[in-house]
Image 1 (cartoon, rainbow, N blue to C red):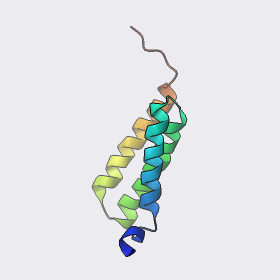
Image 2 (cartoon, rainbow, N blue to C red):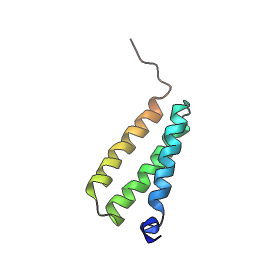
Image 3 (cartoon, rainbow, N blue to C red):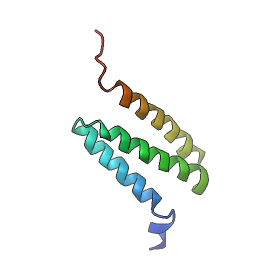
Image 4 (cartoon, rainbow, N blue to C red):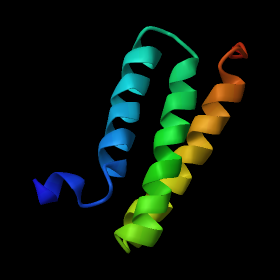
Length: 80
């Protein structure tokens, strides 16, 4: 049971938020970007402060930037 609570269940919360985000975006719901951004923020905290993993921290900073960009460009039309 200890392995499931190793990171104060923050990893489970972040994973759940990521799965909810995929579902929401698959249904063309803009709230998926918010859910992904919250998950990224948790993963950044976990990566840098609890797991001591630069890969997880830096990777999720990039994902967070991409999610913010996606949120703001969601309604823009693509010029052709």
